[in-house]
Length: 360
Ligand code: 5IU
Image (cartoon, rainbow, N blue to C red; front, side):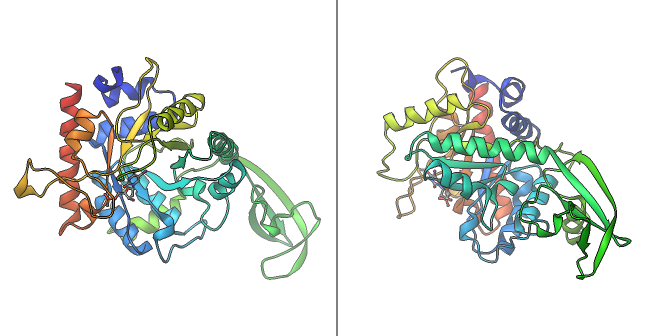
């Protein structure tokens, strides 16, 4: 297939999905096709590893539900802090949520609850077992969210000489009832509304500048990266193949995943899979592949095995070079290393080499 020989730079110019185009560009700029699977126990560790390994990766994969101490604050919480780090280092956040329920339920799981995944994860994935409706529902949810966040209307209400801001979009914000001509200030004082100003403005999808500053200050004042901001589009990966031993995703299942992806090209970026699934000439899906490890440096060239709990590993050379996937997802290979930063660089370099040799 032509995408096996096409460079990421070339594919960034022709691919339909804006977020995939952005990701391909990022991969080309950073010379990286590495995703860190940040399977850590605490929010503090998550932010710390994201900051340290950020320069070497293009995607950070999270499992927010295994992290303790996740701060759900919509402005200064863990999701927003991750977004700031994503902007600083240039990577996308992929919440490996593996949605797997009926359409209505996955939509709510994606957009609601404490975590509000859609707010901070550029990419999520779906388990196709319940059928194609879950993809349609997630796509609709994303479309609604994108429209809302592109043009959110901020209203500033001045009550009895005091001014406060409220967001009309925030349905559960009880204070935003600016229709009434009597309002209560945050201190509980009643007063009549002096003026109501409505300003339509471009929403900042990633993070507020204030938060950028907070994180950067904590981090010895490094400047924000020169990477352009990602588009506000959200993306989906369909779980088409798994790395675990004896999994039930057979060929028929995988083919149905590809079919669903083609039906939702404006939302589906590609697949979590073990090989490239681009077969039609017009296919240009991106493929991310877990189950990746390198042998230790001193044993270069040897085989890598599983983890004894069903996980099966392959080298970047095999996955990117031979099976034709684009991004390798590495967790414990990097996390358990003595120096995760150095190890991330070793994985980046091996995966990039496999890619450059493939397109040569
Ligand atoms: N993961 C897999 N295999 C899969 C899918 C997801 O390992 O087929 I879909 C996840 C599980 C874990 C990460 O979060 O990818 C791999 O971590 P290790 O590199 O530590 O095995």
